[in-house]
Image (cartoon, rainbow, N blue to C red):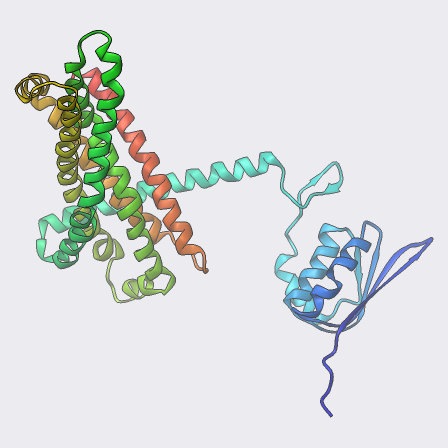
Length: 368
């Protein structure tokens, strides 16, 4: 006859001397769950847990004993040897307390401190990665044969050529929206022709570059993080290091070069499409092409064109660099790649806006 698998039992004995919790049977991953809630609810400071009747204990049972002893303050008696061995690495772990009461959650000050330390470490990692990427780029420029040009041109296609449609649509709609929103107020003063100035300067100096960079951060930066993150989870990055190949030079440099190359080109494309959308709206309100063209030529200078293009090179470096960095920072686990992808998009967009704000202050200070 087949032998029935041994189960776990819990008995709670209450007396004047205190609460006694008796655990018996097999405390494995399945059976520990059946007695967990009752044992934890009954346990408390001064309670005694009799574990002498436990016949088997794995990490699930050890977790129960750890919860009873450290989180609930119970005293464990007759702890099995296997549970003692599993609990030994956590002997120095202490639960945070407040006024003598054990907390299941850490205090807000500790949580804020932990977040601050994490941000400081992230800034440090970004600075270290920036130095490594700069050295690898300089080495690639000094010795072009060390660069994986095939991978770079493939990235140019996926991150640049394939993004023409979405960048063009966003640029065109942005120009149209600005023109429609600004035409009505300016018509009240009879100067609606200056909508051309507004759309052209906003697209060239600001919106063309930053909108393109944000699109690339969500589209290409996340792709870089997911690709390298998957390689990290599959231990392919470790394999490259074992074979003597620098992951930064082998994986990051082609993507970084492609991002720096395509971002200014896409910015020019977005500027042209966006200004065209704005001019179409101005002509729709009755202004002839000659007047619109003359207003555009008189409003735009080379300074305005270069102001946006200079920023676009830095935006491209941020998109490529942050995406690759988050990929290299991917940890193990099923959700690690998704977490790295999310971090790449969020931190990429934040840094793009931060750098754009810095450029705004600098350009204002130097009257550019």
